[in-house]
Image (cartoon, rainbow, N blue to C red; front, side, top):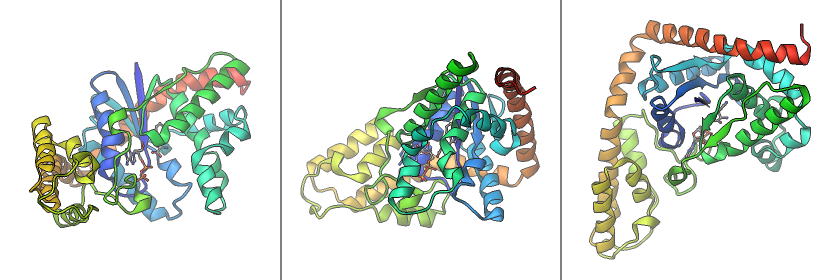
Length: 320
Ligand code: ADP
Ligand code: TRP
């Protein structure tokens, strides 16, 4: 069983990224063959700053290793180190109906906002289909917002297989319902684009500040509160041990428990949760030769797997 997922290096990681995709991905190393990559080519659709792009890519490699991607257990690489993916994107482009891409959320959003889309953004889902299909992936763990992309990958695979003959495994999305969408500090979906994130590797001061600014209602301290209406609790319960989160729920319901206290509890829990990861990150950042070696070996393994698919695909499309 092959599990594949990628993450775009478009800035600093937040706890929504962690719970929505990174943690499930790290856990999947134990139950199957994990293929995991940094999707730097995808970032190019919206990021037009070379030095920044290079920095984000290196940071993303380090972040993912710090958060538990283990090169001994999984194949881990930088997307652009495997050029087969852009070749496959072209073959897939020719069996992808324009209508399918016109319905994709990212493109529709840019249209709705009146932002002129470039061709890269428009065909983003084809590149993503190539990522997935190149490695004959069975499962793709992602957040809910990526579900449509996986559906497009399935449609494209089916279309290619029926046009040319069986070349691709049809992938399945894997979405953990209970943590499908992590709220940000203002209650909207946590996202870089909404400036409402809690970053994983920010300084203690910055993380504390973010948590203390979580939006709350005007219920007085003494009054009982519904924990499920609180952003603080909905983040807390995803990180705290079961007894601890039951305890916080009870305190909310009993009243006499202020939002400020709950925020402090959330800060402590998050800070401790990420402590070992912060330490690992520092070690890796001080040993970039090792990170580069992992990257090189990962790409070599990924290209080996890609070659098997590409041989078949080239034969089927008649590229000799
Ligand atoms: P952002 O919205 O901050 O730009 P990305 O779009 O780069 O984040 O998301 C990277 C991955 O993290 C995706 O698989 C996405 O589904 C997941 N993800 C991002 N935000 C959340 C969230 N608030 N809740 C759950 N998963 C999320
Ligand atoms: N589009 C995904 C995101 O925005 C990243 C990504 C690129 C990806 N290729 C992928 C995810 C293949 C899963 C599988 O986060």
